[in-house]
Image (cartoon, rainbow, N blue to C red; front, side, top):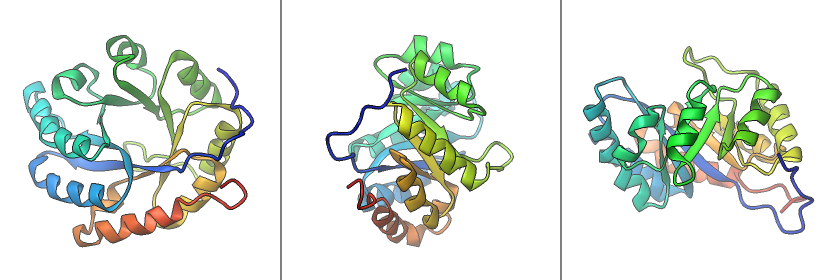
Length: 219
């Protein structure tokens, strides 16, 4: 994996990556998603779906794909590698490397393959070398547990110093955004906490955008 070159141009402005709640019915979620996409510059939306048969999953994704894509945000499915193209999604996000080779074979280079749940630096480097489009650090696991924030900062800083491949860093509240940007995150992920108060989504994202501003030394 090529090392990150010494920057001769200003660092690109970090962007937002939104994780939806686990959705059983995507129809009602179109309105809050539209609100979010209108309030901030969002690079991608990770669509997390409750289990169902394939046709139901495809229809759920198709209900939100135009909403995200109409705002120039990529719609990424959380798993379900085989449904990405049929659902009109832009890519897949995987937790761990179990389905990674299958995703690369099916989806690259037309679609995005992102990877999270990477426990070691070695796993991160393998993901980059094999062709992942991004790595995600610090997201909650299936039980809702996250690594200590200091460990996430350290992992982001290590990655940003050495690798060209973008990294996404998960922030579990607004105060975590600026430290992750300072550490070198290319994207900051906001999760289920964003959607709990629909009336506050726009204001929360506007505040998040202010926290994305690069440190003066690297701006």
